Length: 112
Length: 510
Image (spheres, chains in turn brown, purple):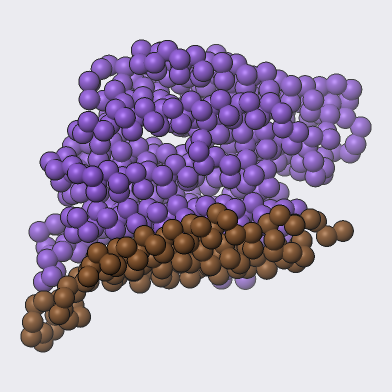
């Protein structure tokens, strides 16, 4: 079961890298980076997974079989950072589009 | 006591100042400038104090959260983040912080007409906090966070002046650095999956006992992310683009940020690999990357027309020297030869010189653009007649970068040549040739811009703040060149010692 998740992680990273390297549309490149980010987040969350576990809240708990808290904290932080980076990249894409009138990495010429 | 909290304050003060600068900016321009300088200066004083302590043998390890590692949560993990300020990390933090402070001082007169104000200084303060955090951090996840802080704030700075095509360079930088940061996070996840730990020292202590394939894969992922950050050979292509399109001030700060990347890379490699058979292989791979960086840097710099792009390629070559020296040091560490340690000393020295020399060149170029009001500095010629000060400063920078005696570049490069020659003569020879070619390239540039018939256009007087900043940098270039022995004994030997002998670091950080 857990191996399947790791395979999915690798597959997502490869898809993301493919999009970044071979797609010419800038938005697709941003999407590719987002896919890599999601893959890494999936990897982190699955590291903290325990079967049949409960949320790691210690007050008034019945069982101590809890999911690990640290990977979840890491994932939350990483999601926030990814959001910031995506917003920044998309705003750059808007600027580039205004400047060149195209999102294609090969067709870009300065607007006269 | 306030000094006990110095490692946290050196990060916290610029971080607070970065967000408060918008409110201070409402009062007035003067108040804002005073606020920015005060914030950076306070952090700089803390870093200097930490450096003085660290080089005299007292390293500060500051725990955020639980004071002792034995205090753990009910789940079993220690609730703490450790900031480590030893001789190596404080030296790098000092370089980064000084670069940000000098850039801020330099930019006051430069930005007057660009009407930039609070946003620029907010990003600069954020970048300085990120760089100091990156050099002090003792655990992997904080490293990822600070790496992203550095990426985002430097992306903002690169695109800031909206000059032609700066968006394209920023986009390239941001794509590469965010992929790098995600690879780093993936590697960190692998370490966490195996050990359930994020503390670098604790992981290093375990790797030394039972190194396996997972550890090496994680180290490779993290190392590739940091190589990307410092712009060495296989991933050097963003560097000239970004340095060309960004303003000269921003480029000078970015040089320091790349050097912090090199330091973090070697901190991790020395910690994780020093006791494993892989150290020789990884060390040589990085030394080869460094040598190819030198080669590519100088050969590409030869054919550039844009001056800033040329200096950008020279920066790739200079990064190569640091990687060559530290890589050789890592490769030879298992045999404990004397030249291995010597190479590390030379590498740390070259790291500081790199920031000084390339920083000075970028600032002189920015100053030339400021006084002549030309967009392309390449169109200027015969400026030495009108502004001899700039000519002298550029001359100092170019002689220092090409390793001419009596300047600092010579002092560090001679150590690198000597020690690398013992390990591999070929790399050393490539280094010497690269250095000579840099001299040829920069003399050509110097002749084109400063010599020839007197400059015809109008020129503005050079503002005092710019002169002060460039004077300070030139002073340090001369000082390190004239008294290398004292500087090495006082700063660089303890720094190299702290980097190579990782036991003290692991012990402090646990």
